[in-house]
Image (cartoon, rainbow, N blue to C red; front, side):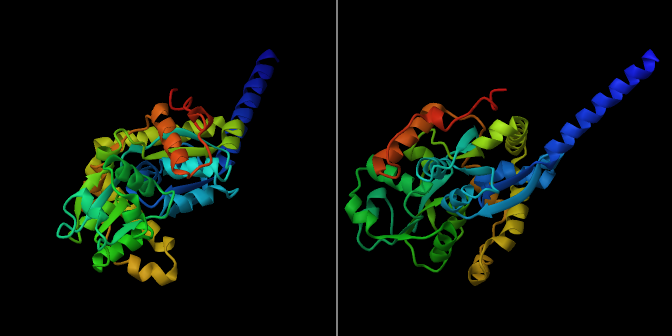
Length: 334
């Protein structure tokens, strides 16, 4: 009889354990990612089935061309996780009051200034009235890099800002192909793609802003509160994919090319799908692009604070705030 009760107790504990595991797997997770090699760890994890392997139930997995569009998606209730550039993450936290926490980094750098070498030979040429300059809209990561460049090189902002053609990276690369721009501030992989049209990389973000934090992994605060184990698994998968990408860069570029091609099919509206289809994102281009990023999950709170302070200085957020308000690095330290 004693053995019977012991077996019954063991069986009960097993059922409870299985029930908790099933409940965790059933917790729906909406994820948003950048349509760029900035989010390589997410695309690699999706391709290799590592999210599923960890029991993460991704009911939504959406790609966005710009960090600003992705930031807007974070305000939706069905998106709990995002791989997003640091600057739009700060904007959506400070301005839209979306309760998010940065739980890991994904890369440093990843932005650049590409130019027509026949028309722009030095940074100061950007001040010339006939130079057609492209950039994303105000508040985007490369827009902030543009401001940092103007500060560092003492450029005349009045001569530059009123001539900028504001458009997303896809339209900028298409405009470059059609000879409609002379220079463009772009995120990777788009900056490297511009080189295919004869443009030259004149300046990279590491030259303008040493140790610049590129993208980060953010989660809604409620996910940390209600399902910390899921956040732990997300960080674990992100570390695994980041380490793998650094070790097998050529294969990582091939996976990125395949995954971006899949995402491209549903990303663009009908009226721009044909144009976007002309942009061939090849493994060779992605390999060169990824070599220009430093993939790491480490994140420096001092750099995050510097970025917050600079955004406040530019007026993109109302006021500065302590970096620890948006950071929760306890998961990456485990």
